[in-house]
Amino acid sequence: MDNSFAQRRRRDLILAAVLTCLAALAPVFIKDVYVQNILILTLMYAALSQAWNILGGYCGQISLGHALYFGLGAYTTALLFTKFGVLPWFGMLTGGLISALIALALGYPTFRLKGHYFVIATIVIAEIAYLLFLNWDWAGAALGIDIPVRSDSWATFQFTRSKLPYFYFALALCCAVWLVTFWLENSKWGFWWRAVKDNPEAAESLGVVVFNSKMGAAAVSAFFTAVGGAFYAQFVSYIDPESVMSFHFSLLMALPAVLGGIGTLWGPVLGAAILIPVTELTRSFIGGSGRGVDLIVYGSLIVLIALARPEGVLGLFSRRRKGGAR
Amino acid sequence: MTTATIIQSLASGLLMGLLYGLIAAGLALIFGLMDVVNFAHGEFLMIAMYTTFFLFVFFAIDPLLAAPFVAAALLVFGAVIYILVIRFAMRARSNVGMVQIFATFGLAIVMRGLAQFFFTPDYRSINTSWLGGQTISIGGVFLPVPQLVGAAVSLAAFTALFFFIKKTDFGRALEATREDAGAVALVGIDKNRVFAVGWGLGAALVGLAGAIMAMFFYIYPDVGASFALIAYVTVALGGFGSVFGAFAGGIIVGLVEATTALVLPPSLKAVGIYAVYLLVVFIRPRGLFGSI
Image (tube, rainbow over all chains, first blue to last red):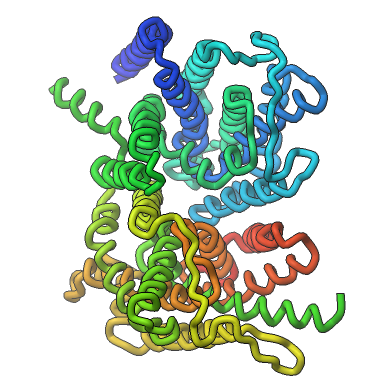
């Protein structure tokens, strides 16, 4: 049993290395900027959903307010850069740390809540922040922030001529969150989280400090979500509350993990790899009419996956794997 | 700020609150019955508003008269949605909660897309209904007639719901299924039929609210989104598992919203609602009257 577990982890690591190499080589063959754009977004959502999965999937605390951390990362980076000329790399780190601290501060009262009361608390907290940013004149209010282009360089993390640097950063971020998840999964924390998710009372009685476990998961999850937000701000060089902090965005971050396979290592990646290209392609090919056909296709896909594969698309593979072993 | 202004806004807040209660009632009923939070609830409201609009445009039926027909149409619609989609979402063996959230979220997106496709994203409104734009003055307080009627309909609906749940056989079956869906099967109650009717009833309630709302609010494909969030907060504030918690929750939400609008800029009025929700659940983690 122990041996097969170690085997599985080795296989996961090899698969990840192979996929990363393939992804890193992809731009050699894919020159089309539109397709590169879709790849960048797919990697970004995979990273964001992987970060969400740490708190929502492994620890079982369903947050539908992660747009708060994403927005904080984006706004911290953009504000520090436009108002004080601080380089985005510092903004990214600062945004991540601020988000982690805020996650801890918010976790203190909210982690006592259960089920839907917790979910709705995460929604309304993010929504309060959204409304405040919408009315905060210094931060651009509803008009948002236009990030001026200084120079094409890694120092300013701005690239106007080629999208490739963004692609490699997104890939690196995706790998980083995956590796952190991979490491945490098999650590003391990972076991605590699963115990907290399955049965908090039993976990508590066995000496798991439930509250601290949740806090740890929230901080890690918020940090990486904010780094994703900082990346997004640089990538699109324009942010407003609607695009980085709305409730809809919180759902979009959770969706790949849920549809791919919640609380699994590969679920978020698989979910993003299916959902994001479908979303983007339907939007550009049939969404142009403005008549909502893209929404119909996208929504139907979500309903169908949710109903046909409640445990996520990943369930297809694990069943086959089990069948093969027999 | 004079006393008159305060009374005026509290009165409008109370009327709006009763309407919020009515919008949330269906959500609370469905949740109480089967633990499902319907993320397409706002879109049910949107469908009800469009139904009212088209009855008015094509058949010149005033929203006031249309309300029962809209409720009946939504009753059928809700039951059909249960049979076609939700029934399957209930079958999930693992992470049932998430499956339901995202199945209904997907449904909401489809409904918005369909509304855009068939009705275009244009803003519509009913300008010439019998009650639209009228106000009456009671002791110097001006009250808009559509909202006043909405408040009356809300009170009537909650009274009817109370008697329905407490006094009729079907209402008791509903309560029993809520308590223990496995045991009711043994006494010959068809769980699926009860759930389908529950969804129908929930949708019918939001249908009534939609007919009233169509008298004084713009009608567009995304109209449901803003009201849906308020409805979730209303239900949770009252406490999940209690339909009448939604009534109290609605009134509180309406009054808090009106009070916040007196102090903060109007664009921030929802902040008051959300802050009160957080305050309540931090003190009472199961809402005001919640059992679960």
